[in-house]
Amino acid sequence: MRVPIVAGNWKMNPSTLDESYALAHEIVSQDTGNSNTISVICPPFPTLKTVKELCQNSYLKIGAQNLHAESSGAFTGETPPEMIAELCDYVILGHSERRQLFAEDDKFIGAKVSKSLELGISPIFCVGETLEQRDSDLAYSVIEAQIKSSLSAIPTNKMQQITVAYEPIWAIGTGKAATPEIAQQMIAHIRDCLKSISNDFTASQIRILYGGSVNAANAESIASQEDIDGALVGGASLKAEEFLNIIKAFSSI
Image (cartoon, rainbow, N blue to C red; front, side, top):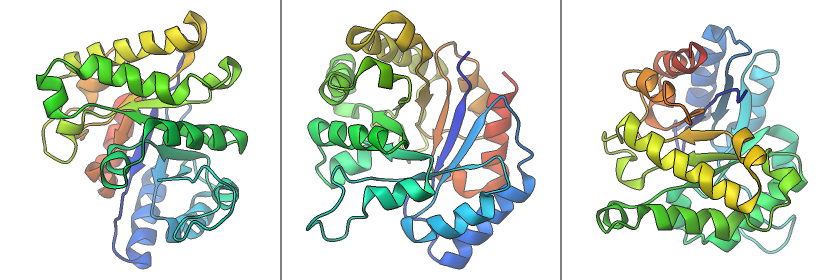
């Protein structure tokens, strides 16, 4: 059985250390936790240590929003991945904003996935298509290329440690969400792609999340889909009550 993961990607929010601590505290104080769902919050880098300490006696796991493929070197502005490994259980890699704004390509993202696995951090590997690609009937081939280019070199015995997140780029931060049926179709395709680079059993064990404007109102219908194993939540994860309601939606399935 694949235990669902609900991961909150705070992105570059909130604006201050105090606000980040307050949000984490609000979530921790209300999250009773259960074995049916893994709950993860991914705050900005400067708050990781403080939030980690706050959450150490809770069910919440801590994730980073990025990780470099190299352990050290002349990479101004980057954080050594070994430092991240001391604080985080998960890391988001290949997010569409990293691909679009920082020109990260599939090969580089694949190297990051390899580094995270080497350090014992569970990667949440993101794939997704733009509206233009979808309208041109390229969505399925784009997703397949992202998966094969980034993950084909990963040993099969490591693949189950990866969580894949499908984030239709056209639905991120727009208030639009793919219908649960559209999300299910694409996520079933993702599982087929994973089979092609591993095997049927391994692919059946990999969690695949949906990440496109997930909120408390649509979480239950998304959670009811056969192949959807959780959510990568953006804006809604900045509201403690709404984030917890999304977790509850996946816990009750």
